[in-house]
Length: 210
Ligand SMILES: [Zn+2]
Image (cartoon, rainbow, N blue to C red):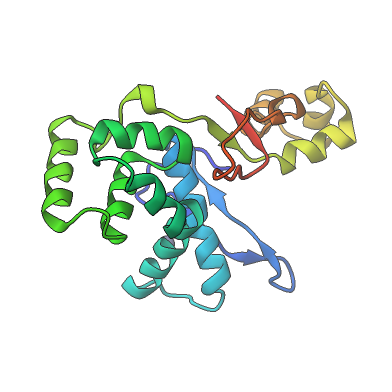
């Protein structure tokens, strides 16, 4: 988990370790929970499909997108959900709360799966622009932010709970503030009590927190 770097690129996903077998997804802060969720799924697609691809391309990006879309909104279930009622932006906002995918991504998914035609898609995209939702979707459809857990879990196992930041800072030769700011980006054990999610929504990583 990295601080926001004010770069256009907000994700990286190399295989790491001496033998290149450790998957690593780096996330920068600042993006919305639904965007982060889709980005992680997209990067997971790169890890699965493009281990030896050192240069990105439209084809590669489309493959990672298709992987993420199918992982988060599988075709069969998504069609069943979206075909029951007329597609409107308000309805997509309700679907977003259950599926954890942004209204814009759901709209694109509905078009990809031929739930709506090109004319309907274009109209709804225009509506999104007019409502100012392209950069900020309505807060009533905000979903919970998921935090990674592993680094903090390692710290908890080594230093106990509540975390003794001063000891960690001393051992790591970092300032207390720096250690806290790093570890607070990860979920504590108390934050891992995920709320009840519908069966069709996967929670990754393990923790959920505001
Ligand atoms: Zn990509």
